Image (cartoon, rainbow, N blue to C red; front, top):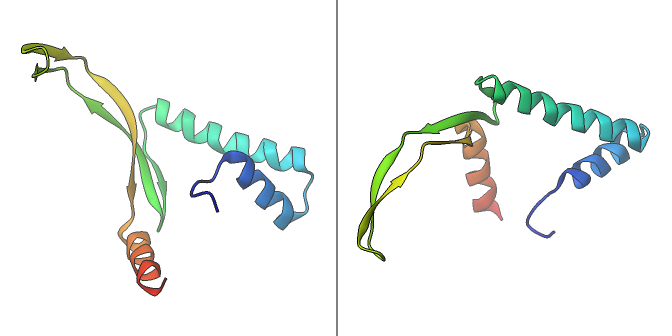
Length: 100
């Protein structure tokens, strides 16, 4: 395993497990991610029970010191998506890591 999974891997895995046509599985996966995107754009959280939560993180504008140029620099406000793993899933990952 390469240490990462891409959308194509998810589609292929679901295709093999369900036997549905590849194009239909691809559309389902695309729609799933599109729904997550729409929900986050509406500033709502996306919660998967016993897995984790995606939400938008808002950063305020800040003034930071740039030691390389020895001057203050303004860091503009920004938004980013953050994922918080559920305690249940975290315990499972830690348990699996100990058994590995």
